[in-house]
Length: 135
Length: 98
Image (cartoon, rainbow over all chains, first blue to last red):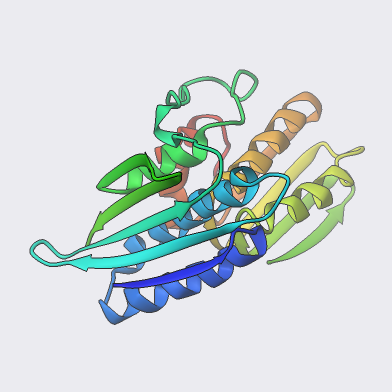
């Protein structure tokens, strides 16, 4: 298990992505899964950066764990910001025309579609969001 | 990310190289915003696009809405991974992908 605690800012998304990719490369993670995980990081860490401590800046912790049989990677995002459950949001209607389309909700929807499991809990003053991707 | 613009009459080609994500989408939004005037055809060239998150999708959707009013928008050189993102999000139905 490895973890990184870093200021939750948009600028740090790249640092977090590099940190996670390093672990993924050691696992010979397929390119497609890696890209889906990178997108999930952008969505989830980006959300924390934008909303958790707004207008202040606080820390977030990103933890990477590997499980075997089946081989999977579990990434946990932890912040101490305002309680926010991204899974509570209804999925966007993806069958509407461009004119009727709403801008919001697509990010978490993409994460739900591309990850094998996603859970949220609020515990001890922390938002704990966990994603799992089978490799 | 780098953005290359090529204007030919009222036809504008915008080529994106790199990642279109939370950090870079605002730059693309800015570039497009100052380019729409007088354009009847907008071509987004994604040959060099590595990946796309929802922040990028938002900018693409905005551009599509604007171009619906004043002409057309075409996306070309979409690779398999990017196309899967368009499929998962239903964007394949609202975009013109060549």
